[in-house]
Structures are given as C-alpha cells and as structure tokens.
Image (tube, rainbow, N blue to C red; front, side, top):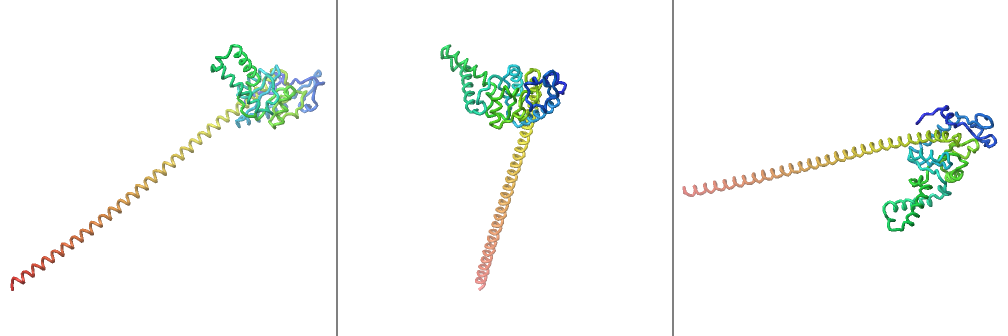
Length: 311
C-alpha cells in the first residue's frame, strides 16, 4: 500500500473545510479548529479513518467483489474515472441515473442494448441503413456510453460505493443504503458523517485533496487484487498437486491390480500344470501295470505250454 503522511494530506489541502455557517454539527469530532471563519479538519483523524477505509476496501477487492466509484462533480469526475480504470473498478462520473442500484435489472437491459448497438456499428450490420439512421444510432450509442460505459462490466450489484461529496451524490447514497451496500465517502464539514459506513473526513472540493485520497484507496484495492491473484495461483498449484497425487495413486492401484491378476494367473497356470503332470503320471502308472499284467499272463501261458509238452 502506498505510504502517505499527515503532512502530505496538509499539502494537498485535505484539511480545509467549509465556512463555519455551513457546518454540520455532527462533524465536530473531526474538526481541529476554526480559522478565519473556516473549519479546519483534523488530518490525524483523516489519516486514521483513511487507513480503516483502505483496509476494508482491500478486503473487498481480495474477495473478488466490485467497488463502484461515484463522483459526478466537475473537479472530481476526471480524476476518479482515471483512478477507477487503473484498478479495473466500475465508475459513474457523469449523471447518476435514478435506479442505477435499486432498479439494476433495467439498467442491465440498457447496458446490453448499448453493447448490441456498439457491436452492430463495428461489425457492419448497419451498413445497409441510411447515413442518417446510422448517425442516429451512433449518437444513441455515444449518449448511452457516456452515462453507462463505466458500469458496463458490472454484472451484479457492487459490494460497496466510494463517493466524493455525499451531499452531491445523495441519490446514489440513498440507493446504496436501501440495499445495504457498504458506503465509503469523503465527507466535508457541511455533511452528516452518520450517513456513511466508512467516513473519510476531508476536503471534497479541491482536486488535489480528492486525488490523494482516491489514489490511496486505489492502492489498497490494487494490493487486494494482487493478493487475490496470488491466492488463486497457490490454490491452482495445490489443486494440480492434488490431481497429480490422485492420478499417481490411481496408477499405483491399477499396477497393483494388474500384478495381482498376473500372480493369480501364474498360480492358476502352475496349478493346472501340476494337475496335468499328476494326471500324466497316473496314466503312466496304469499303463505300466497293464504291461506287467500282460507280461504275467504271457509267462503263465508259456508255463502251461511247457508242461503240456513234457507230458
């Protein structure tokens, strides 16, 4: 995570609040002093709250969920858009359409329509239409891209919103609260900090203040994304090792079964061979006995013949 100091916050003008007459009394815990009718924000409190918000955002990013960046005021939109794109997070920096969160399914239909128009303009589907019709479609696509382009990759509701100036983004804030979506925001001395889950007391009007806060949070998000990537790689390696182990185990089992089968076949063959030998031996003995009997019979005949001759 990038490192900043309280002095860096002061240099960026984070400590400048609004005129005393515009203050919200609920911001008192974050106000350091009043100087020439202007409230000065305690940058130590800012640093503390910024760190808390960064840790929470890092955790959300690590879990694979999205954080929607919302900043439609002039001095914030370009900075926030650029930083959100750097960390591949969705953003709304033009006009917040009512129902962007509470009527998300309808918004998704508009995004799909925009994507279909974009595809048709690129792949030549509209080549046969008149030049005027093509121009109308192009303008329609561009208009939708301006408002919806930043949330086009958002396939489901975000896990959290980060806002610059909750008074300016009150519609987005109210929608997030209705849906119990976590809220992070730069809150100036004229706003109610109790409206937000993660308050970052800071000047929400100066470009440098907006940039230093947003970049710090983006660095935390980037860290979370990198840790997620590393964690996924480790899990993939573990899964691969497990698969290899199972494969080896299966191979060993098959080889063992094969060896047992071969051993069984060998024993069977040996038994059959022994049985054949025994049978052959038995037949041989029987044949020999018959021969002996035949020889005995012949001898008997010879004796009888001799006796008869003598007489």
